[in-house]
Image (tube, rainbow, N blue to C red):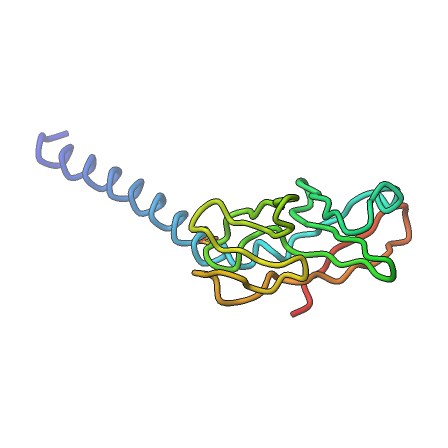
Length: 138
Ligand code: FES
């Protein structure tokens, strides 16, 4: 193999590798917003452990669950600004985003930006097995 053809072959291999890396990154970016459509579930028994008015973070499901005297609410735990996971502040009784400081009340409404949309509310569905599922309301 001549030197020149070896150089072009190497260039093609590096170019193909670079193309694959860029295509994967682009794919991840394009489908990032559909991440919320993954199956989210938790054992039904968790409902008995909740305290009224104290949101409970289901980390694996990516859900904040809040029990009131007459209902149950579930929110996506990702901030509606850029998707960081918000935390519950029990003293102030608000959700706070550690990334850019957005704040949401216990009902998910924006108290302080930069987020402009309320937290994404999820539907709670009892499945046939001993699990509950959380589904986007869109
Ligand atoms: Fe939450 Fe920016 S991601 S405020």
